[in-house]
Structures are given as C-alpha cells and as structure tokens.
Length: 480
Ligand code: SAM
Image (cartoon, helix red, strand yellow):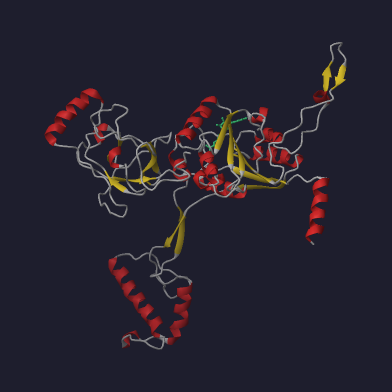
C-alpha cells in the first residue's frame, strides 16, 4: 500500500511527488513536482517556480537527491499565456534550447550572491517574482530541494487558521507520550500542522515490513467542525498519503464527542486546540457523566413522567487499559482556569500549566575593552586607531607576560613577567577583563515562530476496578 513521503521519504525527488523548495531561512514553499505543463502556462520545461531568486523549472528538480542545491535556470519567466508562449518560442528558436542546470551535487558550492530580499506573504505563500523584477536570462540564485517533513510543512503550509509551531508541538507530543502505536485524539485540526507532526509520532512503521505481529497500529483521530477546513484537510491528507494514519471527522466535538461511527478511538493521548476545551472534556471520561432527572425520565402519553429503565451502554472514547495524557492549548489565562477547574471535577490528576517561551540566543564576545589596571575594569572604546593599536600592543604584552610565568618560556627579555602581576592578570582573565577576550554578551535573535499559548497538561489514571485489584493481587501471589 501507499506510504506517505512524510513518513518514508524516497531517496530521490520524483515526478508527482511533494517537495519543499527552500529559498532561504523562514521561506519555503511546497510544490508537487511535474514534468508536464499541466496548467498550460506556456513552458516547455514543465511547471516552473518563479521566485526573486530566479526561475526553477520542475524538470531541473526531478531525480535529485534530497538536499540538492539547484541553480536558477535561464527561463523567460516573463512569458505567460499563449500569446507570450508564441513570442517566447520565436525567441527560443533563435536562442537555442533553454539551459537546464540540474543534478547539482548537494555539496557543490554556488557562489552566486543573492541580494534580493523575498517578501513573505501573510498567508504564508511564496511570493512569485514580480515579472519585471525577474531577469529573463541570467540565473540569479539557487534553492535547496527538501523532502517533506512535518517541520518544513509547518513552515510552508497554506494557513487557514493559526497553527501550532514546531517548538510547541515537539514539547506537547513528548508530554502526551505520543509514540508509535498510540491512538491520539486531536481537535480541532485547523490547518493540519499538528496533524502531520502527530501522524509521524504515532506511525508504527512501514506496512510492507509488518513482520512484528504484536505491533499496535497507531492512529490520529482528528476532528474539525469547519466544513471547508475539514474538506481541505481531507484532500491534503490524501495527497500526502496519510489517510491510513489519520482519520479525520467533520464534527463539533463539544456537542457530539469523539466516537466515530459508534466506535471508540481508545485514545491514550489527546490534544485540544479549541476555543473552549472545557466543553469537550466531559466527552473524554471513563464513565458516563452523572445523570440528571431529565436524563433518566420520559413523558408517558398520559402526561405522567416515567423513569427510563434501560440506557444504551456507555462507550468511552478512552483506552481503558492505559493512563491518558492530555494537553489543551489556550491563548488566555481565563480559558486555562476554566479548563483546569473542569479537569479537577472530572478526576484528571497531575494538572500543570506550561508556557513555551522559545527563543534563540546569540552568544558572542563584546566589543574590545581593556583592563586599565584598576578595579573598575574596562576602559572606554579607544578614541582613534592609534590608541586602539597602543592598547593592543599593551595587552599582547600582558598575555605574553602571563604565559611567561610558566616554566618553559621562550619570550624575549623585554617581555619577562613581573611575578607580582600574575595574580592580577589571572583575576582579569577570570573576570573576562582582558579585552582580547571581550565580555561575553548575549542577545535574543529574531523571535522564532511559536504561537505563544498556555499548555495545560494532565493525566487520567487508567481504569481500575475491584476485579482488576483482585486479579493483580492474584498475579502477584502466583509470580511470587
Ligand atoms: N492545531 C491546528 C494546527 O496546528 O493547524 C490549528 C487549530 S485552529 C487554532 C482551531 C480549530 O478548531 C479551528 O479550525 C476551528 O474550526 C476548530 N474548532 C473550534 N471549535 C471546534 C469544535 N467544537 N469542534 C471541532 N473543531 C472545532
């Protein structure tokens, strides 16, 4: 059966497969590679990706090892449509065949500097090159061709909603113990960012290699109540070969819970990215909620109120044989408070709230300062080049002097150390006051994409009946 390229990427890119075109950090675009010009845009080279870095015919992207760097081709990107195609053909006839620069080895360095800055559109789409901005002949830059992964899908997917980003979902998947064989409930699915990451986490292995008979098949049970979003995700999951790992249902989970065609997902892990997760929690219980008089009574034809005797047996959406780990994702603290309050009433334990404040720190040495020999440490920045050079010479001498206090010194006489200085120099070094070392400073790099929300984690212990207790005791005695 078909295996998703997200779960088992092939070693080479091929036609009709999904690829991620990496233009630069924070700018990637997904594309289905086609060697034919299906959209009839007038390219003999198959589909063409036009960017500010140049034009990339799909034919130059097919059959390459993932990670390959590909140089822009000489394609007349200004020619679109039939009329333009005709004109372009005339040009091509005289100019000879379009140059293709394919199969560039991954390690091959291309030194073409790329000055142009790409604009990231709000919807996350890759900006097409403005026609006038794209030179019609000379290649201007390069891209890298990447296989689809949940991470680069998250950075490049078409946004239909806010999405959960990699720093958040990696932590969430770890905390809710999503692993091969797990049944994971996800609601709502939104743009499918979390869906892809969780599908990989629970995926139990290539079906063709199913030699292990005890292998439990993991699955993502995904729910989305917005019709168009649901439809788009169904299509996307089919295109990505994930339909066997993700079961998506069009459903308002707060109203109608999590059973699918009367079947229990038997969930071990749950992720709720909903505006009101506390309304969905009662559907994630091990036993039916306590009944009100209204629930158990019916009105008889004579107007009397009669008590119902039989109810359909309760089917829990949870795995009865394991503890269940849940995470809810909410932007406001008020939502967190309501969620936690309902969790407590429903028997969830180990409730904890976490906020992932993911930042990248740049650590580096500060600008040159100098040990001025007193306890105030650094002198101000040198006023001019001469002063800077003088200080450098001074400090070089200090360094040499310090090292010269060792036994095997090869320094000249004038550098001979004053032993009284050694302790001072050492202190300076330890406190980073020698300017050659510079002060260690850090600054926060441009913020990583992480939709900051509060993550509430909790655990619902496994079901444990009197019978389980008796069996466990029996087993313990037998084993002893
Ligand atoms: N986690 C998603 C991702 O990473 O792409 C984004 C989820 S988005 C923020 C929230 C989604 O929940 C929306 O698509 C919304 O339609 C859906 N939703 C809201 N209430 C719902 C409900 N009661 N049942 C099912 N889906 C619901």
